[in-house]
Structure formats: structure tokens, C-alpha cells
Image (cartoon, rainbow, N blue to C red; front, top):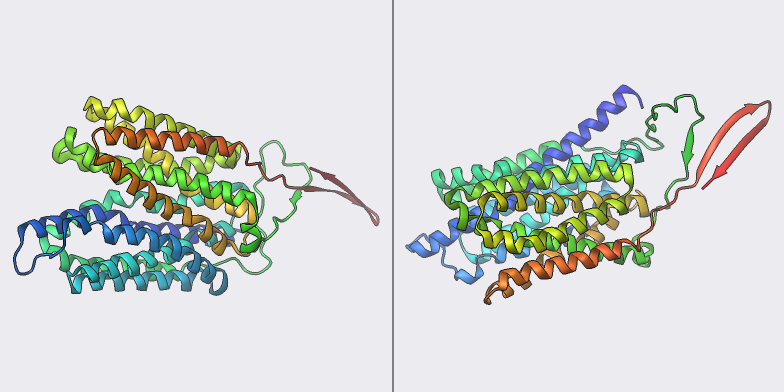
Length: 434
């Protein structure tokens, strides 16, 4: 890989990370939700005239639109390229927030945040990772995927205080216009940096220390499966189920951590949210690097089993009222949740190739949206009952234990290596090993 090519690859990685940092405004919903609730309770001519039970509807719809728009966006990414796909995402997010600024009606926010912004998140997110992966060796798949998606996980660290500041100074609807302009400009601007490598490009394999003098090893290309071929593979359904469990359990806690922290930390509850976001982003990078070293399946097994232990441990930790233990618990749960967003795109690339990667990963990513919706809704129903919070953690822990068992049925994809030997005259010796 030439220096120019390497630089271009890292430019795409930085642009993708920047786009995800902007699209992480999704995690600011808890801030918007609090402001809307305060407006409803205060009342008045300009207040939000919603029922309290409907406050979370735009967010729930947004998660579904995000997940399922990834399928359409993935197809676009494969056909028209990442730059135009991300550009569409930036326009949709900007339009959605403008609609929210224009009206405080329930319909406007469900449409603006739930449909337009949610779809925009899907288009932008789907375009950020694939081009970055294509510039680098397969040995760096986990690392590159982890860096790019870490932006989305890290976003709450700056978006939460920024949103709180804007709401306090400008009010809800003016703040939406400011966020619309800011994030649309960032996503649309960075979209022009996203680019696939030129046709025929093959990333150089990194030289392993101690193997500098050995002949190059070329790995047989992964079969570029169509989405119909992928859907006929048992691996897809095993991965979908484990993604459903891992993402759903993590989102269940992420959506509740601020409320849990208030009991022991009061006004400092945002610290738990920020630290959890740092854990979320760190998990994406660490899991990526680890999976490059020990394999995707082994890493997924470790992360799911660790998350299961944490869910069961949450019962006594939350009951103890200790702020320190709660912050540690939240950060590790965020860490394990974040690993899912690195491992599953890497699995999709390893198993089904690059040609239809956007559409294939979009179909797999539907597990994220469905998992968040189902496990979040079940958790809310349980929490309404006496002792429901403990039951939610026990249910999540049991599901994660099941997910851990499923990972043992996943087999690492064995590549066929063709080792080129020296050419003597017109004879070429080729050694094939599994």
C-alpha cells in the first residue's frame, strides 16, 4: 500500500467516524424527552399538548426506522456509492429536525424524529463503515470497524451537554433548527470524503514480525453472497439472534441508566451516562482489535458471557444504592454492548463478502432495531410490577446466556491459503494448505 493510498484510507476512516459522531444525536433523545415532559407539565399556549404516555413514541419509531432503513440504504451504498448515500442521510436528518423546529405537534415529531431523522441515521451509518473497510487488509477489519462505529457510541459525551445548553438558552424548537443546520452540514460535508478504492484495488497485507523473508500468502477471496443466499444460511439466523439479544439487553440498560443513577447520584446522574458512553465507544475498538487477534466467534462468546454475568450482578448492585458500583456496572455494560456494533459488521464481511455488503449487513442490522424495541418494551412492562426491575435484569441475563451457547455453533470461516513458491524457469510450485 503506497503512502498516498494509506492516507486516503485513513481519510475515509476519519470521515466515517465524524459522520457517526454527528449521527449520535439519536442518543440526545433522553434530553429532548425531559424538555418535552417539562413543557407538558408546565402547560400554556406554546406547550407540547401530548399525553405523557406518548413521549417516547418518536424515539421508538426512530430506532425501527434506523434499523430497517439500513436495508434500503445498504442497497443504495452498493449501487450508487457511500458518498451519495451519506449525503441523503444528512439531508434527511436536517429535514427531520427542521420539521421538529417548525411544529411541536405529536405528528410533526413522530414524522420528523421517528421517520425522517431515523431514516437519515440509517443512510449515514450504513455508508460510513463499508468504504473504510475496503481500504485495509482483512487483518485490520475489526480495528477499522471499531474506530468508525466508536464515533456513534462516543457521541453522547458531547451531544448531551450541548443539547442541554441549547435547550436552556433557545428553547426546544429553536434548538431543533440549530441542530438541524449543524448536523446536516457536518454529515453532508464529510460525505464527499467517503470513497471506495479504485476497481481492482487489493490492500497490502501487513508484514508479521519474524516473517519478513517468507513468501507472500494470498487468501482465496470470500464468496460475495447475495442477500437471498445469505438468508438461506443458518449462520445468518444464529447471528441475527445473538445480535437481537446483545443489542436488546444493552439498549434496555442504556435507556434506563439515567433514571437508575438519579436515585444515588441526583443531579450528577449525567456522569453515569457519559461514562457509559465512553465504555460503549471503547468496547467497539477493543472488541475489534481482539477479534482480529483471536477471532470473531471467540470474542463474541467472551462479550456475551461477560454481559450475562453483569446483568445478574446488576440486581444486588442497583439494590445497594452505591453510586460507584453503579457507574462501574454501567460502563462495563456499555462496553459489552458496544462490542456488538463492531463484531456483527465484521462477521457480515467475513462470511458474505463485500459486493453486497451494504444490503447484507442492513438485513442483519434489523436485529438491533427489533431487539431494542422488544426487550425495551418487555422491560417497561416488567418494571411496572413490584420487583420488575430485578426481573428485567434476570431475563436479560438469561437471554445473554442463551446467546453465549448459540455462539458455540458458529464456526470460524477457514480461508484457503495459496502460498506462492519461487519460479524456476517455466515451472511454478504451488502449495495449497487449509
